[in-house]
Length: 394
Image: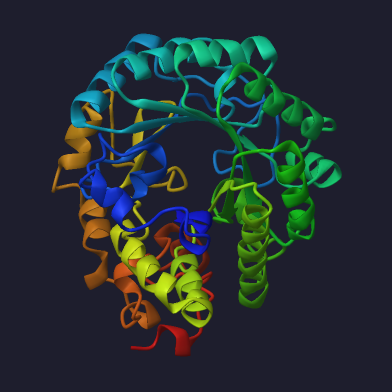
């Protein structure tokens, strides 16, 4: 994650995470990415079932019953292990996690064990009653996926009315006192709606938005050509995000804005600030160094609906083990799990422009699963790194 509002608008200073000694257990949620003791945030895909049919779904979900999901009891055992291991956040995802009958019990069990519970949802099932029950269960945050304004979003999600239902869900969360924000995946098919989405955010006073760069796994492999932004298009999009974020801050609406899944954004923000505000740029560089770049297999992990452990939620074709056989903490700590060991020592394995990039310690080689998906080579440069050779040269 790259915090555009934190970095570009100065809502976080380097001294802020240092005040908590960068310890994950002590850090507020908005500073977790700067922790020094990076126990992973765990994405738990609690179900594969979903009531929508999104074009970029990494799990190939559909509205059918899937077999093999972890039972409630198995889930509670998993949560016991994650809490003992020091996991700071469990992100409940799917499929659509609100379709799982025991989701409220699992969220309440997460918070009772001292972890923060977050849900990633399409928002269409967020009724006022459900939002109230989520608040009672201790949910920290609901991220609602919108991939454009009404027409674009509904086309992207394969269901008429999905936009209106999601917006109703966002309002229900706000009424119930549940912190809520947007999740927007950037593709060539929806970036024309980006300014309109910022207008919506300002109008609805939505406090947080995450813009996700596309990762070509699951159904999103069909968007590798048609949906993929060029490097120039990506630069323009990131510039627009920065400019609209600053405009909202200057208008007295200081929302939290992040970009996700392309760590080239960090150096790009720094280089822009270096031209505009060199003093701020120096503080941004320090924060980026604390962040550490891509955390697949290190700062983020994934448990699938059947208990399979993955390096992150997009890397579904690589199984590291299964919590039905070994606890997550044991799998995650095992030096004999080859892919985890390689991801944690990736700088020695990268080649091409990544290997000599001046930002390697900040970006950490960007998104390896995207490099593999597009080139077939796990250690090739991320094809969606849009920094020029001049910008990355030492």
